[in-house]
Length: 579
Ligand code: ARG
Image (tube, rainbow, N blue to C red; front, side, top):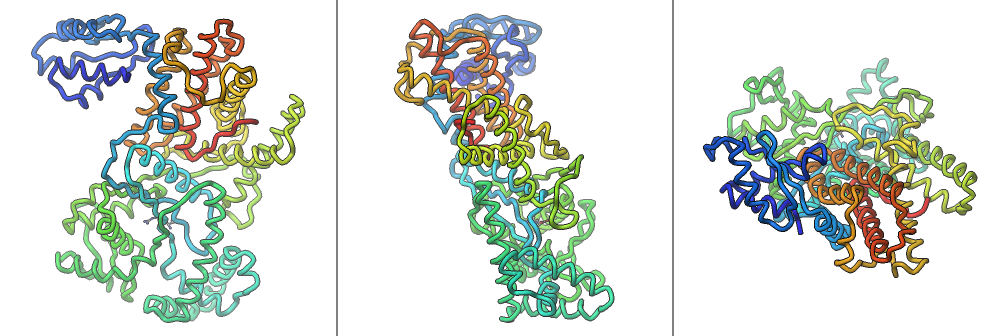
């Protein structure tokens, strides 16, 4: 039984308000002595034309009659109510166990398509930590929307077009090394690109060559097209290694180049609406009424730019997917760019520009930059992942020596890989995305703090208790379902606290989607882990004498495992059963 839903229904029936409205107002008080749920009656004073305490008294009668409510209290304009504890706990545990990995899912998004564009690195450039941020956030958002029933299209808008490809082709002609390219494509492409910039300072004709190559590329000349394709394929191969390691997938890699031949339609559209004006030889759309600088559509030499390709992309996405939302997970420095793109579309009468959302994020900072980097100033994601995994391995190895757990070397390496990656993913999602991230290994790998190792360790511990229960013959498998009636035995404060977290799990998923903030779900997972550890500290689960109570407590463990595993999964993190 979904208590919240029942309460919402009862209040809606009595007040005549919609269930959605009641649901928004229904609160969970900060302290448990104030009730399990609280309804602010002063919100109704106007519509019901009564003083809040009177409304509270009337509503109290309705709820007192319901058998799932133990008692109600009025305080100020609030109606506080206490649910019948054992029924509540049993209901939540049962719900989590039957839901399994679909805990917290819903059909909110049925029939709606959400496009999540994320990662979008640039061909021939290293995959740095900024791209890690979008990759990790975008991956989680896609999973979260999917959980809520949306059709999700994961798009990787590769930076695979633009004048820099002219430079790359010119540089390749002069200094390219085929063997080096095969071995480490991005290194080699970066090398010649950097060299191009150095040399071009004293040889301006290089810039002319580059521009010429780009124009030929736009015209589809086979020499340029061939090289471009090769650079793209090789870069993507390297990016795919990172995606595979992180468990990230895409539905398509329609990068900037994909839209370049759709620009003429954009131009036509803007022309027909009389929005294109000439400015210093370029074709632009003025955005004064939005307080924005003009958006350049075509450069003075007639070539397209980043913004024009993005405008074409929005139109293509709408035609192809009829999106409900079109989300861009891209760093905050590009906020102006997206405002311009969406405003041009709005000005052109494209109504769904309001369903295009830029989901920005902050910077990544390293207080102790002892991280070894291979390419100058940028920090490569690969190096960061390796460092995290190495450090994790050291911790696990010394723990294992201390506790004499004898985990085989190979398994220790595998666990370190999972936890090391999890620590990085966790860090990127721990706080509101617009905040800058400060990487501090002591915090990230702190087995006691709000960290991935802490949550994973909690999960592994809960799971090991279940395995022990199987060995002892208390349950036949770790996911065997209990008999419903024994769940009524659960009444303790700790069990109640855990039940509430199971109850609000779905709400955390919904909030994370509504604000495009995975941290809102991550906090729920941390709270579950903390509440479980308190429970485990206070109750001896396996040593519980009474058979039914012991079985009921194991069910709580099963439910908590389900919730933590599902939450982590939605955050792109794989739980580990042993560590
Ligand atoms: N490739 C760009 C970069 O690395 C990000 C692309 C963002 N997406 C877009 N539709 N403009 O900065």
